[in-house]
Image 1 (tube, rainbow, N blue to C red):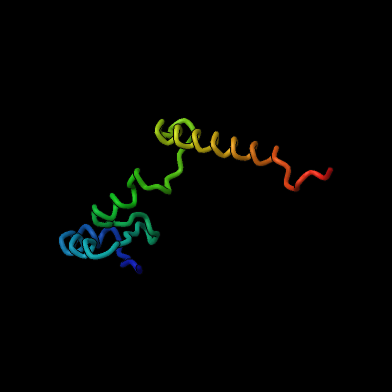
Image 2 (image 1 turned 90 degrees about the horizontal axis):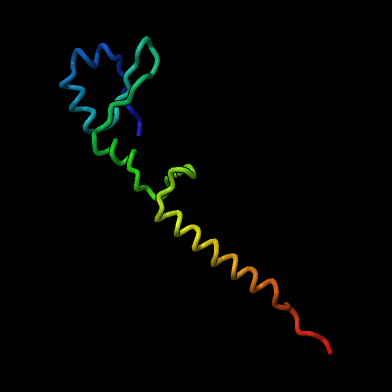
Length: 95
């Protein structure tokens, strides 16, 4: 989605107008000719920062315990299945 780009000074001068426009789509504000801030509706901000997003990446130290327990259980299950399959002969024994 293309964003409208305006200077910070212009935004301050016409805050009401640009506030309403930002409710319909993002507005990029510039300072000294460089993009510095994007104004988006609060719903969009909340969507972008939602911590329950399943694609979220965690540091090991901040992984929720429920998620860590699920991961550990799956690793143990996969490990058990691998061990069971690797000890079973793939072809029948020849006598």
